Length: 343
Image 1: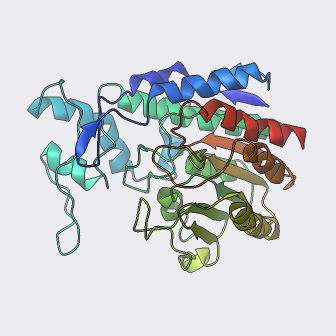
Image 2 (image 1 turned 90 degrees about the vertical axis):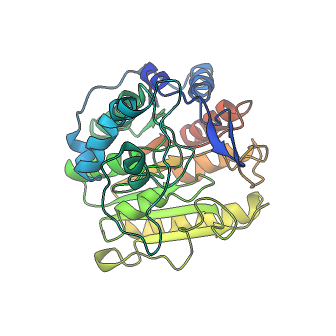
């Protein structure tokens, strides 16, 4: 299995994130990708490739163009009113009983296009975001060329980025862009299997009314866990997308037996959907020692996950999402990939 990776991810390195009522060192940091890359190389999975540039057009297939333009210009606009000593964070959100007009002030526009306060924009964010998308789209190229599987070491991650919203450390939705690119190059149906601890609200939003992409999500119960307002089991899609969205909210403390029961049910729906390819939003923040998550998976569970995904028997694209226990992130990601390869 070949891996796609770019050093451009380092251009996005937040000074801090707003969490627990204070600005704290960010959990989402360059070290995450470094450790995953080292583990992939140590397991000798295959070549590590640099991505090829795909431009902005593939992203317009899954995101609003005005939103994409804002991400490109946000830092320059921030500097017109602030200094470069702080990262750009939103100020107030257009919530219930407030209007939905895009403001002119950068503080208002950051709020208009985001949904949380721990996804800062800084110098280099826009370039890193486009490079991360190129990593995923280059993985698509590998599948289209005949590879059985590919691993896209994307950073920043993407599954929380919706049609015209960023948040959850995510700015553009790499997995969604990859799924759409597969369809645009001749595939008829694609399934997304999101195993990150947090609900992939962005992927759900993008394909909510689509019947050609099945979206399955295993995640912490939104009554208890971020992003709180999406991920309930009764969210099943709309229009042409009815029943093409499946959520598996699980309680805090969920261990492997219950987690794999939910996974097997999700994979049953994937098999019934008969996809031409599967895109895996690979988060390993389900690990028992993850600092911002509350499942109890062990390192030994990740090769099992990889083998279950391999049993689907279709081309599979792994797209890196979350995982913040840095001492174990590389081992756990490599475990999924080697489990897939060895199945």
